[in-house]
Length: 106
Image (cartoon, rainbow, N blue to C red; front, side):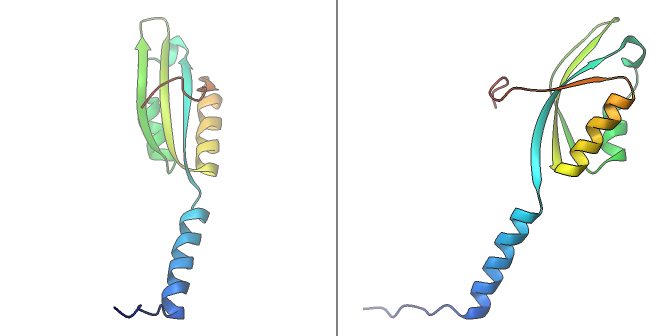
């Protein structure tokens, strides 16, 4: 019968610290419908957003014509940065609405 390896207190503490760090890092993923006014359709707004804030952007779906732009944008980052990003978009005249869960699969 093989002897069970005893876990040291240091190893347990390291695992607990790693678990706590992953929980407190607060990363989340949020999806939003963005509706662009005509004057912003040709501007690199999403690029500016990703350079101004510590968020990862991912365009999930888009429909753009000469009059309006509608984009489903996924933002990944800490909650506070996502909130600042959304406020910045709204300040620049883009309507931002959360995507309902399950509206866009995968």
